[in-house]
Length: 283
Image 1: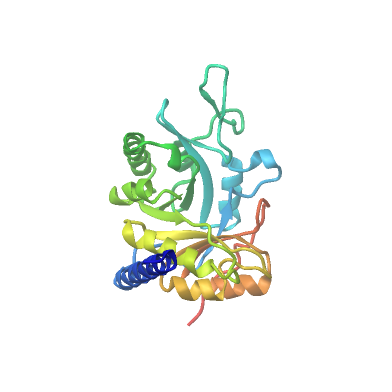
Image 2: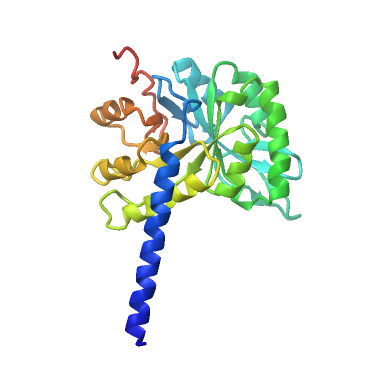
């Protein structure tokens, strides 16, 4: 048998297996229920709060300001510190000190933790938790973190209003198994890219294979959307939390009326209030 025939046969086998897997994932997702996912007409949340300076992002002041302005939820960046068993709020990964221990950025004079956030602002509010170091945690460390999060979520009465985002489906599904709502962080290609549908199908396979609640996705640009028409159709009924949405009035109106879009974060690295854009009052 020639190498050309072997190559062709291999390609055919891969293509058949891939299409079979995608078909299986689609059938699995058709039966999945999303009744417990956030489904309010107040879809526009705040990314890192409303802040006046870069240093104020992800601070208690910024989050309080966002809630006072009408946000029903906020997106929060955090890392789990295995040594101290704390969830420390901050966007970047901690730097290492001379002793090798992580050094976290302080907020308003000290380390800011999820425990403090939930205690101060948890009542009646929802939280999109962007887990910065989930990929770097072992299964044992993840289970330890879950036990800690269960405690502070119950004490803060916010358990059912937490949405934990991460890109590691195996670690993430452990949180879903423990009763939390989770979001698979995805990084698809722009909607017009010829390989975009393949990447989206791969994410659907992951989503169907693990116990995860919804997905998180970058919208992209006005002229080069990632969450564009083709991707929207391909995702079907999957609940989507969309971030980095351009601040365009017509686009915001379109997305806020999309039943598959559950939460919207407007802008990128800017403090912006678009909480008055809602889907409320529609028949």
